[in-house]
Structures are given as C-alpha cells and as structure tokens.
Length: 396
Ligand code: SAH
Ligand code: SF4
View 1 (cartoon, helix red, strand yellow):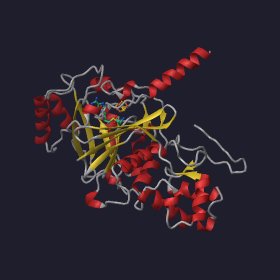
View 2 (spheres, rainbow, N blue to C red):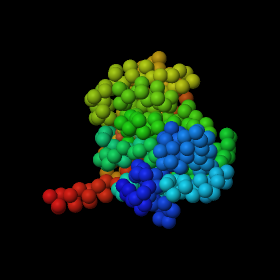
View 3 (cartoon, helix red, strand yellow):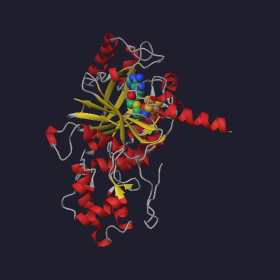
C-alpha cells in the first residue's frame, strides 16, 4: 500500500485503503467511505478536523452523504461549509477503487473486476431478478484456502482477506454503476439483496465481514436489511454462533453431499467438521426459525451426488431444520473435473425435494457467458502473486 504523506506537519493517519483512481484529488488521505460509524467519528476527531463535541452531528451528516447519497467528493456535501469541505479534502478521501473491467452478460448479469491495491483484484457480480429485486454477490477474500474440488476459486491460492472497506467498496461500485444512490427506495430498488457467495470463505474473515454488514445494513445509508444479507459458508462450524450473534445475517451452507466419504472429497473442510457436527452447529444458529430458514446449497454433479437416493438422504438429513434448498447446476470452468447433471436428473432430484415440502429449488445459472456464475470467479491476482514470487525467488 502507498502511504504518502506530502506534508510532514500533518498528523499521521492510517494508510489509504485503496489505490486511488487516476486523477483522485488526494493521494495521501485516509479513505472514509469504508468505515463504520464509530471509526468515522474517531477519524474525524483524531485528525483534529472535527471537535469532539461536534463528532456525533458531523458523523451523521457525513454518513448520509457517503452512504445514502454516495458522494465521492467533499465539495458535493452542500450542507457542509466550504471551510470544512477543504479541511476534510486535505486529510481524507472518498475515492472509489479502480474498476479494471466491467462485463455485462446477455442475461443482464454484471461483473466488475475491482483493483483495491497492487495485486488485489476482486470479482463482484450483480444478478437482476434474484431476491426481491436483484442480488449482489460479494467476495470476502482474494482466492480461498479451501480447495473444494468443483470450485474455480478453490484453485486460486489465498492472496489475502479483504478489509471491511474492500467489501463495502464492492457494494458502492455496484451502486455507482446501477445509478442507485439516494434512492430509488423500496419497491423500485434494483439492488435489494447481498450474498457473500463470491470469492473466499467469509467465516475465515468474520470480523471484516461483520463490520461490512454493519455499514451495509445501516438504516441511514445503504439500508439493506440483515434479513436480505446472506452469508454462505462451506461449514466453518466454530464460527457459526459468532456469525449469527454479530451479524444477524441469513445463513447458507454449501452442503453438496449427504455422506461424509463424498463430502470429504467435494468439500475437504468436511474432514475437519464432518456432517453431524455441521448439522448440530446449524441447529444452534441464533435466530433460526421458519421465517429465517437456512439455505442449503447443493451443486448438481453428474453421476457424483445426483441420484434419487441422495435426494431422499438429503430430505432425511434436513428433518427438523427450518431449511430452504438451492440446487445449483454445476458451472463448468476451464479444466474442471466434473460435469453438470442433465436437466432431467436435476428435475427428478428436485421433484423428490418438492414432494417433501421444499419449493422451486433450482437456481438458474446466470452470467455463465462472462464466467460470473457460482464458482466461476477467479481473478488474475494469483498471476501477480506468481510474478512476485518469481522475483523473490530470483533474488534469493
Ligand atoms: N466459500 C463460500 C462462499 C462462496 S461459494 C462457500 O463455499 O459457501 C458460493 C457457492 O457456489 C457455494 O455454495 C459453492 O459451493 C458454489 N459453487 C462453487 N463452485 C461452483 C461451481 N463450479 N458450480 C456451481 N456452484 C459452485
Ligand atoms: Fe472456497 Fe467456497 Fe470455493 Fe470452497 S466453494 S473453494 S470454500 S470459495
């Protein structure tokens, strides 16, 4: 990260969260747009820009400009005096990270490749018509430490956890592109839901995921309610209670198999937290009820986990758990070792679940043409990483 301090008399502030867009007005400033309310108040006071007695009022004022209006320039904050605007711009920035690539699928799905720092490239996908209006699939890590054998992201080594600001920036970039700041409200929203189903395992980055949810759910800002925010995990059992308690988010579990021997292969984390432990953890998830069900994700792999017997085993396994099931047709990626089940197999599987009371569970693949579908995300970050590694190796 760059940490340029042009004026040595300035108080030292934390380094900027993002590489600035070319032309951004302030290369040295700390970025305010990815902070929680408490962090924003502290930054304003510690910098000396706002006196402690006015911290609450100024934080609320700035918060609405940043998270309701989406401004990226202090000069647009029309109820803030010119003098204060200048002081803020002198110390801080609201710049977005760089959008390296934007793709739009023929089905309306949008995918952005966002660069927040050298070698840190994040993929974010907007899917219209999912949830109440449209869902944003955000990433929590660059790469993943877990190696689920059907997942493209799993082939990319972990580069690092994303900061809360980098998670929030994904939502801000999407709202910029969807032109959705300052309303439209309620029914007219295009972005109504957030799913942590992009790159990475969110429960290995829970503190930052929780801080990001705090900001995204705030009523005076982006205001996407916690009931419309879903965190998907491959089954990090010891973190489930903390997830529920700190975020009150909806839970999704990447199950994919009903037997340990098969799940051990598909989701290797199962060797650490086998199905019985996982199910016990899910049953204890805070706030679980018929109105707040767990979503079980089940990827349909030809000849691997798609038999009628497995559908029946799934129904058995979920007995007594308030659950929804999402059947995900496997999305192939270059070199993937599996094939997607045939449509008729998926339908027969779904019919068994339907008879047991689970409604319309097949997730239509979206954005396959731009590799934006589930499990297809894999940024180029590892290339950067590989080149850095080569440099380091040659230096040794
Ligand atoms: N790491 C978290 C969240 C990201 S993955 C998790 O595993 O839950 C989001 C969903 O996509 C998971 O259910 C994952 O199992 C599924 N998925 C991964 N690769 C896929 C693929 N190639 N086709 C279909 N779904 C896939
Ligand atoms: Fe990681 Fe989830 Fe992919 Fe598994 S499915 S490798 S946990 S991103």
